[in-house]
Length: 418
Image 1: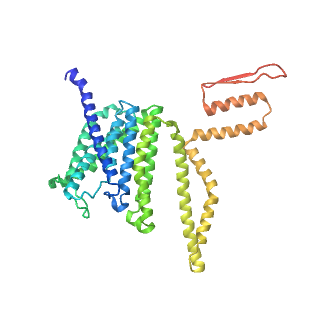
Image 2: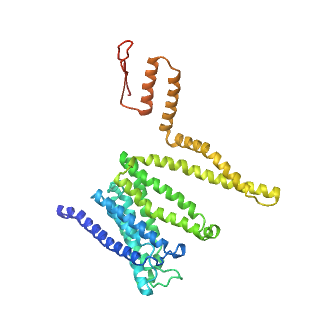
Image 3: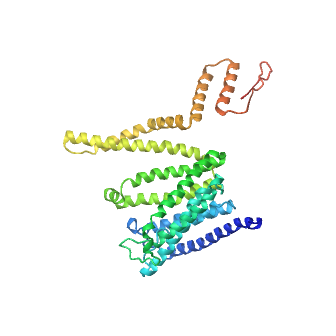
């Protein structure tokens, strides 16, 4: 291989990527135009909320595309921005319009979207994870695995698109249906799972070897992922039909809408914050508050439901009928327990995950008690220097005291940390 051919390889890959981005943006404009010109048409998720999910797909996907374009503008040369564009276009058209009139035309529109989503958008998501946040893979020795994984994901996506069979209630004909490939349709899930799992291993290795800024960027993504995993487990633990029959259609739709907005909009927000480094260092505060109020809310809900259940059984055993007093008493108990329980949860989290902050708070509290009792200035000065060294751990500490009128002397104390 000549040096000239080796140097042209990145330019060819970059040309192919930007060609895909250009075509994807044209497709995105068409999806948005169809959404605006047919605002009340039902989408493919009509059973969960009429045309609402179609609008949510359009708005959250458009938000993702705009964030991606902003990243492309502000962080040029980073592959994360173009890959996020490819994923955002797929998210925009997830809930397709179903009232095309002709089943053949509807099948053609669905086939185009399936080809784009499974062959381009989904592989772009796994590639984004491999390159986030620096735009380069880590470790470098896994770079040679990304190309075969991407090709395998593309081919598996083609198999999904050509074997797609709609639900019975949807009148749709797949124009590219290939029945002989139906036994291989499940390969897509396996290839996508391997790609995403490998990408997460790369992210863990990147976090362990990365610098401070890169670690903070990855903490933004980890925070989002953990919140999404927890909320998904909570909301998907009970089937949708059971939720709808127990709490009503409107409440079930609200839960589904919240989850949909989260999964489609929050990833773009987190990636945008990490890439553009806006209020980047606030993530530790956000994680801490998420842990505190997440555990607090879970504990209060569990206590509330248990209290209502036990009190209802007690009133039923005593009076033979249920009473609203159980709900009132449980609500008052939760209101009374909120503040002390929050303090206990906060202290437990600080001791476990924020030990340095917890120790610093305890040290400063002990110093405040010393200030109230100590009368010797030299002892107080030494104590202050020790507190600063222990809590802030600076390379050098100096204490300057203002000149006094009694002795006309200026006192200075210094200390160095090893």
